Length: 256
Image: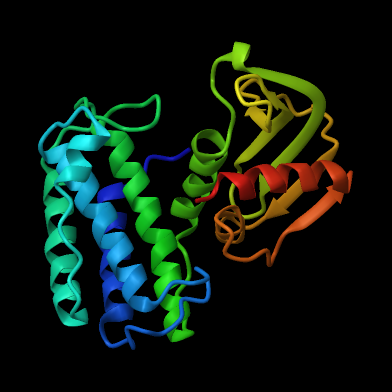
């Protein structure tokens, strides 16, 4: 994937997110997040950014230490906006002044500030889209960032462990390909040994003559949004539909 200015994206997407909700009715439904109001969405990104700002700023080594520092949720919508603005500014300052290789706690194998920086760019991007759903007016997603979001989702968020001993492939292959960027991924479906659940691994040694059972093609933005359960427009599916359905179920089960 191309090198991206993740810090700039965190700033841009967070600003757009806040601007979308600033004049919203706090009780307005967030159509992309069933059961959430505009106030719930604003609080969610506030607490997420507060959590990771604390992790990186204080070089914490556990989830519990950061969770204990979580600020209380304001009941007033205006005060919640002020808290979000302060929190987002702290996250940006912390990420800007912390070398990406700095060791910090994360839930992923990559336990560095660089992982947090990348993850927060995509967190802000997807929730910006959620905030726009309150207004019913959508700005385009940045194509390189969305393409990287697809890569992050497929390789980190939903895939089985990198340890081959924890995954048993069953021979089913799904190809995922972007129509507006040169990126493509070959997924080998199977079972996670530890849980017994269906999962997949990403074939890092894919060659052009690999023959998939099913293929999914879409633009980066459409595919990134689909992976995060924000719609399925623009997807083109060819081949064995049952293999695609299995892949889609794995993705859906991985989204919290």
